[in-house]
Amino acid sequence: MLMNVKPSFRNLVIPVIQVLIFLFLFKAAKSQDNKSSAIDSKYKKGMVVCATPLASQVGLDILKKGGNAIDAAVAVHFALQVTHPEAGNIGGGGLMVYRAANGSTSTLDFREKAPGNASANMYLDSTGKVITDLSVNTRKASGVPGSVDGMVVAHKKLGSLKWAELVQPAIVLARNGFKISKRLANDLNRNRLEFVKNNPKNTYLINENGWKEGDLLIQEDLAKTLELIRDKGREGFYTGPVADLIVAEMKTGNGIITKADLENYHSVWRNAITGDYKNYHIITMPPPSSGGVALLQLLQSVKKYPLNKWGFNSDSTVQVMVEAERRVYADRSKYLGDPDFFKVPVDSLINPVYNQKRMENFNWNTATLSSAILPGNIAGYESDQTTHYSIVDSQGNAVAITTTLNDSFGSKVFVSGAGFLLNDEMDDFSIKPGVPNMYGLVGGKANSIQPGKRMLSSMTPTIVEKDGKLFMVVGTPGGSTIITSVFQTILNVIEFNQNMQQAVNAKKFHHQWVPDVVLTEKGALDDNCKTSLKRKGYKIEEKGAIGRVDAILVTNDGYYEGGADPRGDDTKLGW
Ligand code: DON
Image (cartoon, rainbow, N blue to C red; front, side):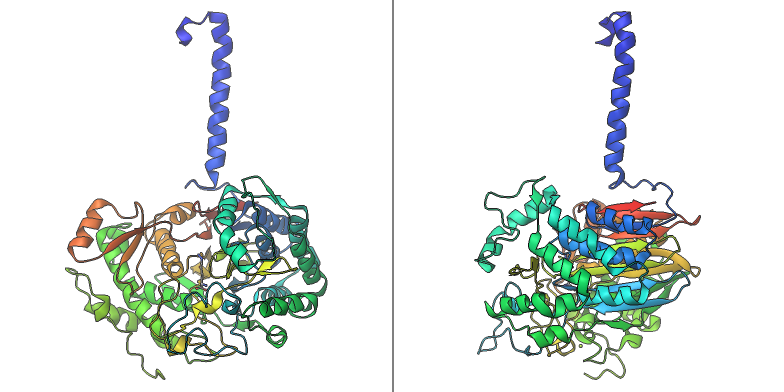
């Protein structure tokens, strides 16, 4: 067409078209930045990767103000409560792994606890049958929230800016409102009926006409609750008006959280558990996370195999990883629970020799049946919608936090007048031996319900060192698939030379002993791989998305490279 244009007009049009094409490509490249596998711009002073662009911005602003990684984490946590109500929370709990720039490590367990009036059979009827949904969508499903105490305690020990400065950005977002994303609009609309059913007198998060992308979400009650937390710290949540509102909410249904439960809630510093994989050192979460133990077990189980030679998601690689997962999840079902209530044989479980031995009985020619795998024999054994954020600061302090309400929007119970949702974390207990929870996970005595006990978690916030230096900060939501997603993300970088974003983007697969099936994202395994595995007897099923990993890698030349999961609105921001 341009051939027919007069020369003078052509001279004008061609540059204009070139500029338009350039602008279009530039814009496309920019909007892809978050999703692509390209290496980031060079960031050395700090980075935040979390579930929403607004919360990432809040975290980056804190880093730029001179805050450290913990300051940024606190600000991000509260900003996620406002901008990511599916999982961001003050009504839930979480787990934190921290590595200071000098290499010292600690972990903070702010997981919810069973209320004082909880009991082993509280979700069973008189005949011993599980009452459908009682541990999920009711006031009785909530554990005592730990997030606010966790943030206060982390800040007291490791923060540097003033507490009020860190809570304030969330208050502004809640009071002034923010434009919701398409994803949040869809999530809210999808849950509307449950919200209405569970909260007949409360319109928080409910829009009768349906939410649309770009609608303003204002949360005035939440702003007031956050102001109490800003001004009174822990006391602003666990005592006074907010505690009164939580207990009042319990009384409108079958809830059992009391004022004493709230007052008595305390998070716990625990030593990190660690293990080596080649020249990498893994620092991860101890129980009540099962994730840290399982991750170390998985890495030990596959360590002696030449994954790198076999290649990313090749049939041999997948087979070995699946067989390791089958065995490790069997152990999880028996040996993992709250260490304050149950003696978890951590050292025996993460022992490299034990895990390599467990792998000896699999047969290359045929899938091991899960029914043929029992939890291993451990000497001395006494008879077992979440969100993640990764942050590093200019000094090299690093923090990995995974936090959850359990289900998306938790129990779907709003605390009337206080503007937040309560968790349904009690479902993470084994509510009856052998009966699967909402993620299909089974358990027994180690994870039975007892008053004041923490329910077992799969959350796996993890930090990796290489040659003694910070290398990776990683974690993800995803229920039972958390552990295997973290496992794969680490191997994608270490064994398959992917950069951080590629490792996050890479399609994932998952096996958890029972059910005996390999779950995969569409496109995770190519046809050859699937045919080979199926011939050996593996059952393969496609599942929507697996994981939503937010991670940071430190490159050889000391720059921070982010991986923000394109499966969500996750955003990496550095400076
Ligand atoms: O702690 C756990 O293992 C679960 N409550 C996590 C739930 C979860 O990851 C849901 N998100 N997709």
